[in-house]
Amino acid sequence: MPEDQSYEGSEWNRQMCNLLKFFKWEYVGDSDFDAPTEENKQRGIDRLFTFKNPYRGEKELCILESKRYKKTSFSEGKIGEWAKTLEEKLTKIRHSKEFYELFPHLDGMSFDQGLVAIWCPDKELVTGFNQVFLKGLENTDLNPKHSKSMNKLYFFDNNKISKLVSVAHTVKEINTGGLKRDFNFYYHGNKDYASCRSEVLLPMYMIGKFILGDYIDKDNVENKVVFYFGTLNIPSFKLLRSALSDLSYTDKDKPLQIYYSIEDNNHTFRKILPEIEKDYNDLNVKFLPLDSFDKIPAFLNTDN
Image (cartoon, rainbow, N blue to C red):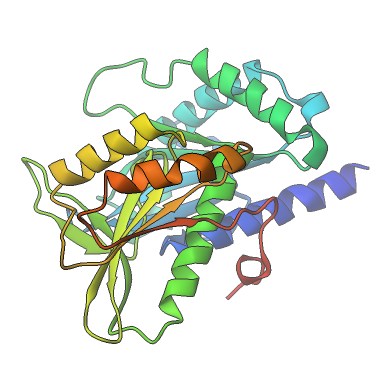
């Protein structure tokens, strides 16, 4: 029934919002509201967020679009349609005087990012759904312009969302250990910005093959953490070791925990793990499987 679909869509939006809140994103206004545009029209927004960019020390705006689709009603072309619509929303709302009259504290913030979170509730059809999603993503040019002012769009499917839930769960578990300093995500330096740490997880880091972080335990020892989402084979972990070295993220005196995302071939990974460990034998390292989730867990399912 339409009423059920509306409720389920609103419920999924609420759950996705709670996940982003865990990563220290902040709501702006209400959910499911109409935002004024520069063309004196209204554009629907599922949720508007701000988050503090740790590099710049400034808040940025991001539109969240939450989609809940069954495999039978989802097609590759949806990605392109949603990308076009989100591009228009960002551009039209960003240049609206009425929008900043409504939310004056947002004036001057960077506003060029949008996130689409697509969830398939059909557990037995999720694999096929994700395959259609990836094909649609490959066929959609999300960066048609090559300029610094272009909008940055991010599309998450069940697979990506589930991995972010796993990260949130692990961070929550780490922070219950009576630490001297809670877990922070680590952002390595570049030619423009120094290295920094933050409880905020930026969208551009959510889509990476690995996410870095650290915490200081109750014995005042800094522990380094890697959330790894790449292929579970020996060459990939050699590349990871090389990347961590290039980022100066390996240290003999600091424990390193590498959490890997469990795949269908996990039984095969256990066979090759001893060989992988040899490439890290000069470090105090542990390889740990991430808990997997096919739905939003209770700790993220309650508003706070």
